[in-house]
Amino acid sequence: MRIIYVDNAATTQTSKKVIDGMLPYMYEQYGNPSSLHSVGQRAKEVLEEARAKVARCLNANPNEIYFTSGGSESDNQAILSAAEIGLKRGKKHIISTKVEHHAVLHTLNKLKKQGFDIQLLDVDKEGFVTPGQVKDAIRDDTCLVTIMYANNEIGTIMPIKEIGAVCREKGVTFHTDAVQAAGHLKIDVQDQNIDMLSLSAHKFHGPKGVGALYVKKGIFLSNLIEGGAQERNRRAGTENIPGIVGLSIALEDATEHLEENNHKMIILRDKLIEGLSQIEHSALNGPHTNRSANNVNFCFEGIEGESLLLLLDAKGICASSGSACTSGSLDPSHVLLAIGRSHEVAHGSLRLSLSESNTEEEIDYIIEQVEQVVCYLRRMSPVWKELLTGERQFML
Ligand SMILES: *Cc1c(COP(=O)(O)O)cnc(C)c1O
Image (cartoon, rainbow, N blue to C red; front, side, top):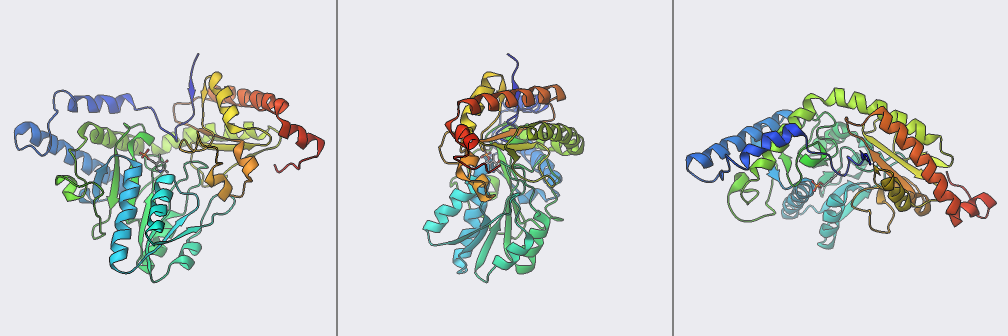
């Protein structure tokens, strides 16, 4: 059976170009950049070339880039660093949103238990926060604002530049989880007023287990991992040279083809949204404008997202019922709840996240199969029966 992969917000296929670029650093040129001999020094050069490449893609300086093990580590390090310096200055207020990734929310939860005052801003029904909300929330004791660039579940693209401007004006550090944005949306850390930014290679056709953290010169950064002096004493451990090379190639490639890829995906995305909207008692989650080019997320009333997912999988369609991290738990998505979906409706959600290699033909097949499977599940659903008889009210 042919597999149609539409779960690119969970992870992407590592591109051939990236793999080819990585291979030499696992076999012929396997040196440790900390070694003083020629093989080690060559690895050191390669590491710094990769850092310069990543910096160029973000309009940053190479010494503002730190390599990590991925998006989660970058988020943890950025937030915990800001909290540490905040504590020293007697500032324990942190502003974020209700729709962040768990790498951010769980880190904030940990800080809350340590006595930090965590304020999670509400979002509107499309998932947006406004710069005005951030401005109103900032206090004298605010040490950090952390707000994601693009939402991994519903594709909302936040007004990052304007939020950054508000933070800058008030002198508060601004971190953004740009894991769904890097390689997909334009990033210019200077123009967009960003102090810290997280990204992860496997979300833009790079390898898994490698990410980066941009930290503006002058912003305090402490280390999560103690040990050697790698990454200018901020991230111990022998550098993942193949991974870092892969990340740099993937980011450069994605950045160069950004507009072309987005143009292609938007056509596919809108066709998919149009097609799925025809299913009765369904609703698009997330915005119509300022939406990630690859994101489609729907709720279908009267069914369970998990069953939908499994039946689609049996037809060769790999999708997600929300975020990959919440799949497997019974709690509905915190993002769908935050945009005002009820628990019941939120349970019937489906996320399809595209890549530029999906085709129109695949989109047609997905629409047809989702229609069939939703219909099939509704026929068996006691909730659907109650909706039809009026014992229960339709919400969509
Ligand atoms: C995937 C993702 C992460 C986590 O990145 P990893 O590299 O898998 O640790 C964090 N934030 C967002 C928005 C993501 O989509």
